[in-house]
Length: 460
Image (cartoon, rainbow, N blue to C red):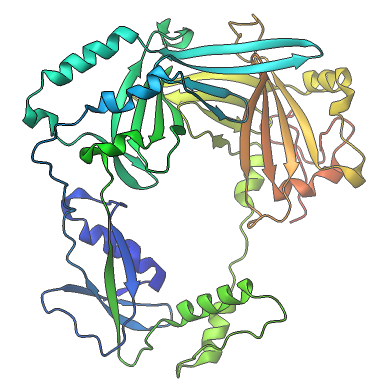
């Protein structure tokens, strides 16, 4: 018998059912509590599990069948390319706004990313073309399709996981974009993946850099839905029925308690709370168990703010590392596991003070209204665009009402060429704001490794 919390039962069962394919979150499961009267199919496998309150359940695992692949005897309609081709002739352009960059996708034309810097009446445009569509390529692709046999035309297309569901897609490549200095001056290129979505308006679902200066865009379009091979397959939930053993209740105590508390939060304060059926167990011991709390371990964030640990951020191809009081670095891992990195700046106390004096607006505000501190990191790798070393302003911000005192969030902006802003937000930063001097530094504690690191105090 395996002992585990009832809510972890899902994670144990799914890999068991996935056989040789491993974990697949496109197969859905639902925990069901039918009670002792449930009569299972004798052929079903089962496992016995227990909760933290020693409640025992026998859970019957469903026989998961491979999803049926839609079959088409002979499709004689337009090719996938012809289905999406109307977008190419309409000169339709889509936009995706992010914190710094704006992305523009013009179907059958080009893709670009750009950012506008406005200084008074002057506008500076930073722009990169991520790929162009060669109009002659359309006929080449169409001829290739027409040369395929009926059997080849009906081969299932490749799929892309969107919101946990594998969706068939049709891809076109846009090439010959702006030359990429980080990739041996090769032109940027983008793979545009069209997927069937009945309610779509040809909008960009996702955009990411899959490798240096190579991009991938997923577009939701209803046009492909006319092709039966590109319609998403319907998925059903597979029930896992758990039956109580040895006098255990129909449902685990913690499950009932969690649902009760959830329902109370949804109701207004003047509404009578719902009644919960409590089974005959030693509730005193259980309530004491539920109220037990684990002391909050603040050492990970303390170690970070003292310069011992570093934080990593970024969800795309490029990621970044921030070591408090030491350095800011942008990097990515190549396919051969080698690391390509760019230094965005190092902390130097003297240069930070010079920067604060040159930018009085960066000095800490009065304690009563102070919510953040700014630190200056300079002397990074030389920027090809400006010929100057890269630099970063790190903004340490008090994050109030967070779910955890250890919560830390990061974001990186590039408002000017090779001049960055790294935002670091955490509840623990709230405790250091009042102790910062006129330069935003708290120097009551010395760091053993580096006297120049802007060290801090804690009120934990």
